[in-house]
Length: 349
Image 1 (tube, rainbow, N blue to C red):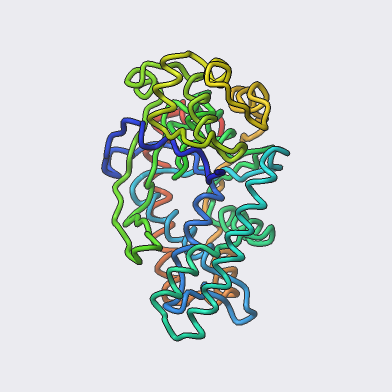
Image 2 (cartoon, helix red, strand yellow):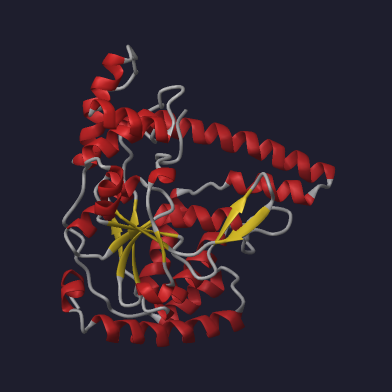
């Protein structure tokens, strides 16, 4: 079946770290991945997302505002990378995601009718929907905060990985593993203050610690190369292709180690797939990216930011406190990063 990114995580060695370990780093964040997290879990007990007086959803703005400030306070500068046009072979996955959301929406409504709020919240988490207007609002919020963002020509994780490969950021940050397939040297997961993962079936939140996954270490431990890591992902299934039935992560690793490539695995096991292996592998190896992401760091526009948040019905007291935190944290992280000119040259600072 298709999945949200490749399910290679069980194979990957990782290191749990503290936020202090990440202090002084510039990290390219998978923006849509983060926004979907906020839309999923920042909800009322009924499962309804936060809204302003005009009915516009604000959960994504709330999460983005406070998460970003917290990262700055930890002396981490996030650079948010937004998805561009998805590749044509991602169409089936996007259709499947819509189908799943429609099913959970119906189950959520039914749970509300039945008065079962616990069940309703569980179902609602799976219904998060991000519109183009919400994405533009997020970009506007970041600009007002003085936080850089990058528009990718295609997949955001590919662009973030490219920036990390060039050394313009220290790592990419995402809950998914695809940026490793795109070649990022370092992947950071669970990047957040009080980061939590929600398990809908169990109805519980589990506190998460940041994790660092180093691509070179992954390849060394698994005794494969990056091309073979991509082949493993293709056997399991990615956002772009359905996996081979009966082949999970560990079996895929064993087969690729034994036969060397997905082509040989398919030929020797007499298997057929409905996708072009070379095309998908090449997309991971040479994805569409852009070098045009240099920008300034003008600092927060506090008055405009306050007006924007208040227009979306944010609490005035909380807004004042957040802006004060932002101003102090921004100065602090800039002071630290200015001493690392190699990490800020592309920002024009």
